[in-house]
Image 1: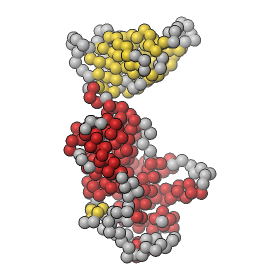
Image 2: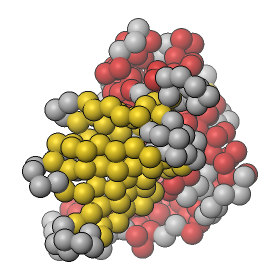
Image 3: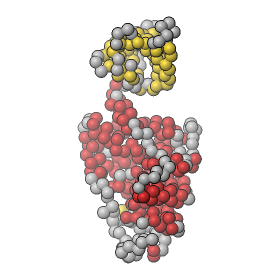
Image 4: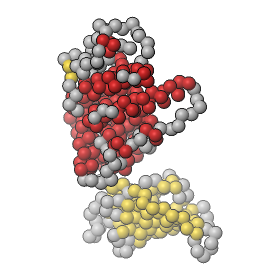
Length: 211
Length: 168
């Protein structure tokens, strides 16, 4: 465990500086505008950009792969009718997540091919390849993280899984849609992330994941 | 470690770098454990591009290769596509030249206009009252079937049905 130079007093006061892809929100907003004007290419780029997120939303709701595909496709078809009301990346992401989640619940309630999320196993991860040391470390961290997340409530698991795939600038908007409280200065950690950090901090391996 | 050494991380604090790194780790983990089918965005883009055509997209339901009986050596493929309103079965046989013959059946049986779109040309035929249709010579390569409403008559209503592209 490394002690870094940020002391306990260094509480960050905003979401600035967290953006690995600072332009992503702006770029998506531009694509939304172009799609509204009828650009198929822009619409296609939005689909490519955000379908991985919708896949995780549908799967986190416990749908089979086939049902998840149907839900994702339904959500995109439905977006076409709503494009005129959506002007920002955050509005788009929020609408997509909420609509996908609602549709996933509806499909699940129909009782078709219901596979609970907890039957998924991280054993499905590809076996460690005799590659670089770095790869091994990353895989160990994934497993540690998986074990910690598995101890959270189903609601927290779903929420963190969804938020993790949301474009960073849209965290706050989507978190609010999902019932994660927003502080006056931006998205707060929330109890799910706080609990995850407590769990990770309790073990040596988890401390490595926290960095 | 970061500020948490002082105690349990509070739910009310703003997201910090450790939280963001954890979320990145979660994304990476689910991306590996439960990846989206790689071609899903492409299939959705294809479907969206066709949306104004009032169409249904048929799915590949079955495909079989059988040895054609008489000449023995020649292979025949039968492919079945399903959509909400229609089942399309086709049988593909090699012609003596570099083309193929496609015989098809629609279920339920109905008169429709049927286009075979290939990279080279678009061929059109009509199905008969039993839902049968045939393209005598279709160039090999990529092809896509579009089953359009009959231009007249009681079967004139309804949406077009398109199949995924197939290789003849």
